[in-house]
Every structure is written in structure tokens, then in C-alpha cells.
Length: 384
Image 1 (cartoon, rainbow, N blue to C red):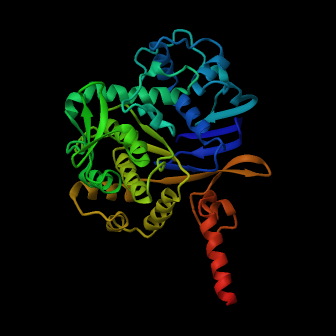
Image 2 (image 1 turned 90 degrees about the horizontal axis):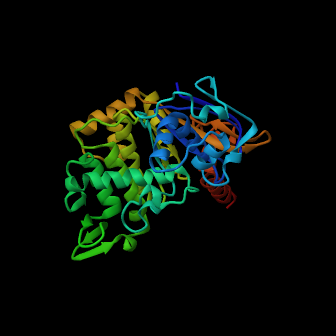
């Protein structure tokens, strides 16, 4: 079921979120979305997180506040207040839940949730993923662990990549590679520079551009690309990892809407592989898709409608991917919003523009400007 309820946690006064196959979270900055997602990771992967912390020479400890501080980052233990209440699938969770249990084994703990943080480009600041221990222990765990996951991927798989990292025929489905190429890399080739320190380079024509010289969108997308390689080991290969969930914070950062659509197509591939995908976003593109998806499902539309939506050429693998999502998957959407009750979450999954609830009608505020602009233009034209 995967149902998380919260009261008085960080800035969140009340949250009630049930995960769908894909779950989209929207809301203004500092409304608690990241804190909510990091808490979700801690609930699902507590044993694996403890194992990783101790593996890199840090102490998990036996004080709940110290554990929360080490995980969420410096100054963040106070997010869990004396009045905080939390239930996960109907089970009440207290701070003591995160304390080490007597005879608790973490040796074989599996990681079930792969977390892609908003600050991901920091991981590649010198053109190569940074070590877990390169970061201060005050940095949120999700960022340190994400960076280390990408480093291990490249260190253990660099032989497989050879000198070329993108495009690779055995990594990702061809329509996805083509979409990323057309919207982000524009026939540039990502290679590995092995003349000195290992680092990524972008070969365009006769130029070989170091990471710091890439466009903002290319730099922001690179950690996402490596994440997709990790989650999708081959175009014809089912997932091999233990991951069941994928969290992506703000996938749209630095990207043109066309590139965001390409990333959304990759999310559909993740869904078809059996992952549950949870995304926080400030872009209307994902909600525009969720809105269209709901209507297509209700109309019992076939995969041809999604081919047209994404401007794709037909192929058997793509056909299975698109058919699977329309027939079997559920998309839930929630808005983090301020009300008279405080900062709460609202289920806006209907995305009904005619709803009396402004958060539903305006998609958590993401369509409010366009709606207001349309009203002003209509009234102006009518008055002429």
C-alpha cells in the first residue's frame, strides 16, 4: 500500500500521501517536499543507511536526535518535534524506531529506494563522481550516498563503457537515447578522459570540452543519465538491483521542456520495469502528462495516443512499454500548500481545471499564471 501520514514534521503540519506507481509532488520552495522524501528513504532503508554510515567510518550511535542529525544534515534533527506523529502503512513510528535494535543484523541489508537529490550536479563538480567521504558529515546522507553510488558505477563499469559513455547501444532503449541526444547533447559524444585524472568530456566536432565547459542543462542531466544507466543496465535487460522505488527531485533543473519530456519518457520505462517512481517538481510538464494520462486511461485509449504525445516511432519494445503503463499503472499527484490549518498536502490527482479547490484547479499553483493570463486576455479582448 505504501501510505505515509505525518503531523508536525519540519514545516509540514499535516501530510497524507499514498504512493501510486508514479507519484508527483508539487509545492513552493521550503514547503517540506525534500524533507518528506528523505524521511521516506529513512523509513524504507534504515538498516542499509546504518550499514553505509558505519562502513565509511561514521558512528550511527544510540541517540535518536544524533541519528536524525547525521542523516538529514546539520541542524535538521529539530524537524522531528515533540508533537510529531507518523504512521507508515498504518503502523505508528516514533523516533526510537531509528535506534539500533538488540541483535539487529545489518550485514545483508538491502537498499530498496534509489534517491536522486536536487543538488546532484554537486556530485560531479570536477567532472567525476565524488567519494562519500569527500563531503562533510553535516551534508545530507542522500547526497553523499548518491555521489558514491555514481562513483562505484563508473569505477566498476568503466571497462564496459570504454572511452564512450553516451550514446551506448546497450544502455537505454533507442527511442530514449535518441530523445536525449536530440534535446540535450545534439550529436555530442560523452567520453572518458584517461590522460590524467578520470573525468567526463563532451566531444563536439573536433572539440573536446571538459565538464565545466558544458551547458547548464548538460551538466544537470549527466547525474540523471548515470542514474538511468544504474537502474536500467541494458535496453533488453530487466532490472537486476534490489531497488523497488526511485525518488527524483526536480528532474527539470536546467532542462528545456523538450528535454523534460525525454526524461519523462525514461520515467515511463522505469515504471514498465516495475519501479515505483516518486518525483518532486516545479515544472508543469509532469502534471500536464498526468492530466493527459488520466483522460487517456478513462477513454481506454491505446498506446498510439502516447506515440503521438511523445512523437515516437513505433517499435516492439516501445509498444510494450507504452501499453503496459496505460493498462496497469496509476499516477497520484499531491500539492504541498499553505491553508488556514497550516502547511498540508492535498490530493490533486484529478487535476480538474473546473474544481472549486484552487489547488486542484491550478495544479498546486503550477498553472495559476497561465490561467490568470488567459483570463486577462479574454476579458481584454471582450472589452474591445
